[in-house]
Length: 124
Image 1 (cartoon, helix red, strand yellow):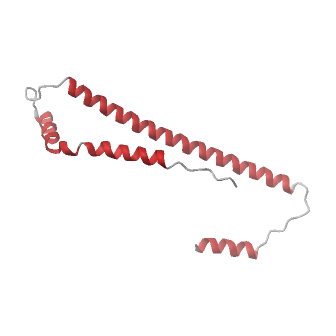
Image 2: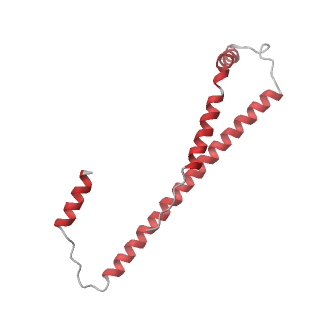
Image 3: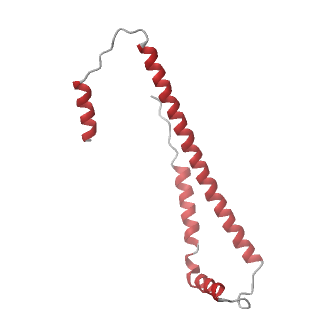
């Protein structure tokens, strides 16, 4: 809050003088339109980023579900091809299979936060 007090005291000490210039209001309105244009662009980019994030999450969940479905429908006999890497992955999955739903839950929570945190534009 120190910065706000500094700005306020600076503005109180250095009051701008408005000259009798007929173009002053036009210049101020032009600057305000420029600021509004920047606000619109920032909002557009924020919405684009949010949409991209949601699409990436949804596509990741769908790809994972498809991979799980394919693995379930077409099982591979891992014992016949158990090299070092496949056997290690199999042992890892057998050991940690109860925690595999954790990433799915995290993605679901992230989607609910993204969809639930819509900001309402205030009219000023």
